[in-house]
Each structure stands twice: as structure tokens, then as C-alpha cells.
Amino acid sequence: MTLPYILFSEVFMLNRYIGDRAFYRRVLGIAVPIIVQNGITNFVSLLDNIMVGQVGTIPMSGVSIVNGLIFVFNLCIFGASSGAGIFTAQFHGSQDTEGVRYTFRFKFLICLALALLGSAVFALKGSTLIGLYLTGDGDAATAAGALEYGLKYLAIMLWGFLPFAIANAYASTLKECGNTFLPMLAGIAAVVVNLCLNYVLIFGHFGAPKMGVEGAALATVISRYVELAILAGWVHINHKRNPFIVGAYRSMYLPGKLLKTITVKGMPLLINEALWSSGMAFMNQCYSTCGLDVVPAMNISSTLFNLASVVFLSLGNAVGIIMGQMLGAGRTEPEVRDSNRKLLTLSVSSGAFFGLLMACISGLFPQIYNTTDAVRHLATCLICINAVFMPFDAYVNATYFTLRSGGQTFVTFLFDSCFTWVVCVPVAYCLSRFTDLSIVPLFSICLSTYLIKCAIGAFLLKQGKWIQNLTV
Image (cartoon, rainbow, N blue to C red; front, top):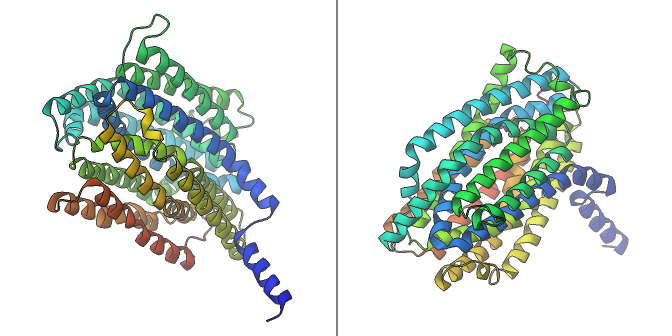
């Protein structure tokens, strides 16, 4: 085998997985604003978490439990918008403004309904839901204190459900139309307001009352309204640049055929996000049975993981947008596959890089919190486990958005939430209830199930049934 042939083969293989400058310029043009927005959001959430952590371990436990439960609501909103968002991206790719307007109306209505439903559920069953996470070994007074702090925090957070839901309808539509910059600016403004108000209200600076966890909740709610005001205000003022908003509220009419299509294709995404997030909440409840120290340790670990995973999660959004626009524009299958392969490579590489960084600071990060040495040591172990599996998380995330971009919502439903409830949840439940495993081996075994998910994802991508134009 000659040297030129070997060099040619290596260059060819690299070109299969690494794009040119124009390719990455397009990817980064979409992804960077999302990365910046999500990065700032998660960084401020980290600072918020640290501030609450300075109040004490018990308040931190109560707040982290409530935030884990609200995460289920947030993902339901995301899933509802994403279902219609598949069509938004493809309608925009085919320059169908009326189609984009209809999908925005659908998002607005379903997000509004979910906000009201979510508020009712948490208002009526909040105490019961929080109590599920306080059954592990530990002091009864600690559990009672965490429950009290959690209920105080939740009572205020409920007021932020509606603005969060409506803002999501605006932001997702803008992103799917290629405008990721404004949602980034609105998100930055919201997190800056949140951070400043956290400092003032949690600790009682500048003459404000010292509100503790209630101050953290109030700051978050105010920031939700700020974000909605910026998004909705800009879209309506600049209606020529956002023609979908013209007449969007004139009526709530939706063509029956399109409504049926969005419902058939989109509802699996909503159900998927609801089941997946509730599955994650169930698994966290299983982890909590290993002891009350697990709740604050998991909170510390997940806070760092959320920050470290910003890039690969944002790239997943970019994968969905780029693939949707390419499919809507009628690009050929070889072109679509080639771009997708390079996007997957970029996503996995980012996961590996930030996983390594996460592992490097695993011993230092927990020292920031005002908690016990046992909680810090446990958090360090959990951070390292998360770091090892981060590249696999990145691959699964990019695969999910790829399948979704072509309207394979039922397949993504099976791939994501069904896998969680059929494989991950039973493993976590059985190991936590019927064995004496501590949290470290239990957590490691549960995350290792993602290796199976990676293999399933690779098979589904190779099949290529996701490569379809929904606008035809």
C-alpha cells in the first residue's frame, strides 16, 4: 500500500467526519447564541445554587427537590413547543409565513393550557411530591425542615409558570426561523436580573428584607416576566422582520388538517418530554432512598453537570434546526447524511472535552458549598461518574434531535422516554429497593444503560427513515 494512497485514505476519512470552514461557520452561527444563552443561564443558576447553598444544607435540599419537580413542567413546555417546532423550521425553510403563524398559534395555546394545568397540580400536590424525596436514612428534623423550605420556595415559583410558558412559544419560534440572537439577549437579561435580585433578596442587601429561599424564588419569577417582555415586545415592534406575528392573535384559527398533523407528529414529543422528565424525577427519588445526604450531593453534581453540558446540549438544538431546514429545502439524502455525521462528531467531541474538564475540578467544586464533608465527598464521586458518561450523553442528545427533525416523533418517543421507563427506571427501582448498594455503584450502573441507548440510536440513524420533507 503506497504512501499517497494511505494519505488519501486518511484525508478522506477526516473529511467524512470534519467539515470545512463554511460548514462550521453555519453551525456556530446557529449554535453560539444558544450556547451563550444557555451558558449564562446555567452559570447564573450555578451562582444561584451556591447562594442558596450558603444558607445551609437543609434549605438547599428543599430547593433542589422543588427545582427537580419543576424540571418536569419545564420539559413539558419544551416538548409542546418542539412538536410544532418541527413544522416551524420546515415551513421557514420553504418560506411559508402562514404555516409559521399557525404553528406559533398552536404553541401559544398548548403552552397556556400546560401552564394552568401545571400550576394546579403543584398547588394541590406539592407537599406530597416533595415528601417522596425525604424518605432516606437521616434525621427526621432535617427532612421536616427541607419540606418546609421546599413548600415556601414552590409557593412563589408557581407565579412564574405562565410567563415561562408564553416566552418559550416566542423564543422557540424565533430560533426555528434562524433568529437565535434575540432569545439569547432576552435570556441574558433575565439571568442578570435573576442574579442581581438573588444577591439582594436572599441575603437582604441594600435595605431589602433577608428572604432566603423565598427571595431566590421571587428573583426567578421576576426574571421570567422580564424575559417575556423582551421577547414579545421585540417581535411585535419588529413585525416586518417577524411576519408570522402579523394577525397571529386576530383569531386562534388553525386549519384542521394541519392541526391533526401537528397533533399526530407533535403530541409524542410532549408525551415524551413528560415521561422522560418524570422518569428522571423517579430515578432521583430512587437515589434519595440511599440517604438524606444524597439529595444535596446530587444537587451539587447536577449543577456542575448542567453547566458543563451546555455546549453539547446547544449543539443538539443546532442539529435539529439545521437538519429541519435542510429537509424542508429538499436537500438530497447524501448531503443530509454527510452534514449529520459531522454534527454528531462535533457534539461527541464537545462532550468528551467538557467531561474531562468536569473531572479535573470534581474535587474543588463541592468545596464552594456550605455543607458537610460527607456531602462534599459524595458530590465529588457523582461528578466523576457524570464526567465519564458525558460523551455518550452527547451522542444520544444529537441523535434525538436528528430523528426529531424528520418528524420521527413516535420513534423518538420509543427511543427516549420508553427506554427510560422500560430500562432505566426498573434498574434504578430494583437496585434501590432490593439491594444494599450505596449511591455510587447504583448511580454508575444506571448511567451505564445509556450505552445500550447509543447502539439503538446508531441503528436508527443508519436506517434513514428520518430523512423526509414534511412540508410537501
